[in-house]
Image (tube, rainbow, N blue to C red; front, side):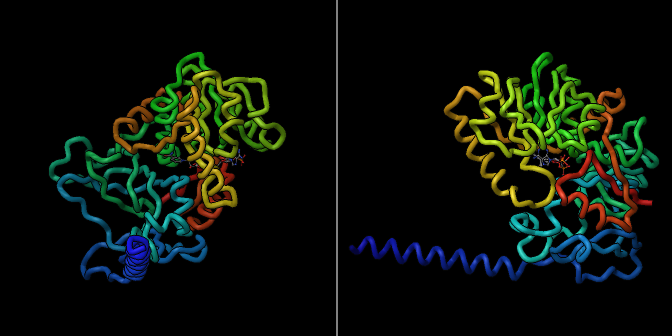
Length: 368
Ligand SMILES: NC(=O)c1ccc[n+]([C@@H]2O[C@H](COP(=O)([O-])OP(=O)(O)OC[C@H]3O[C@@H](n4cnc5c(N)ncnc54)[C@H](OP(=O)(O)O)[C@@H]3O)[C@@H](O)[C@H]2O)c1
């Protein structure tokens, strides 16, 4: 009896502490929006958002302080930024508040996948010099200038693509690592890519082809031609056909949507096949997002007791793989499927398109 009471009061105390912590964290969550630019410092244009909300309501083109590189950094004049899944979810907050800031976004400058020209280098920088063209990943890229660590996720730009295409390349990390490291795709294998027409999917089709696989892409009617044009051997229109009901069996399913059950997908995997749980549907939050997320979790748990493996995958943004992508691009093995570009002043329109979850290939913002 006494123990029951102790347990009850302890649980209540823990709940109260958690609630108080959450309230404290929420109300102290802040950002640098109120900070004024120090007198005498140089300025630049940047996209900012100080509150969570819809792109039209919260995104602003503002003058902010121009960054100055430290000894180990390069100053990049940004020429293009490509939007991707991650960007699509952060403006509205939602569940992302746990990462981006509970009440207000901590990082007020969105965008991350960039390309541009090196304007200046820090004292210890040996890899780059002013005038070099580069691409990479750096939070807060939707600005005229950004500072990037020499050792960070930045490499020289492929010579055969535009700045907008180069800014699209970092998304291909998700495809490269998911297929190579998690799916362990080998020449001759049958690979199905669910969500083949989006930012990651269009790269996945090309990279799986480069690995020598026979590739089937799943997309909607309007994207069949796009997915064929980037090299898919077969296409399945998901508005007319369910890939889990067909006769074909796959060595690897690279799943960017996760809208089919464990048993349905297992049925079309060859014995010992792998399903790479790489995504939960197109960018933005949709009515199916949480359902797809839960599906991924249960599938990976259930596969612990099966021969076929369902493996969750998280991208590792690193310089080495960016270099591999540069080489694939220069060799013509991977061509970013860029379908639309926007000027910086129309960033909100680009975000709104991204958040529909039905973007064709990649979209990028040009910074002039
Ligand atoms: N694991 C990681 O580290 C990591 C990193 C980045 C992204 N991701 C994941 O990758 C996924 C895709 O990202 P993304 O950048 O490619 O997004 P995106 O560019 O917004 O992809 C949108 C694409 O998804 C397709 N799609 C939507 N519903 C579909 C369905 N039911 N069946 C087949 N295709 C469907 C759309 O085609 P239609 O218009 O034809 O419907 C559209 O082309 C995201 O869910 C994200 O979680 C994972």
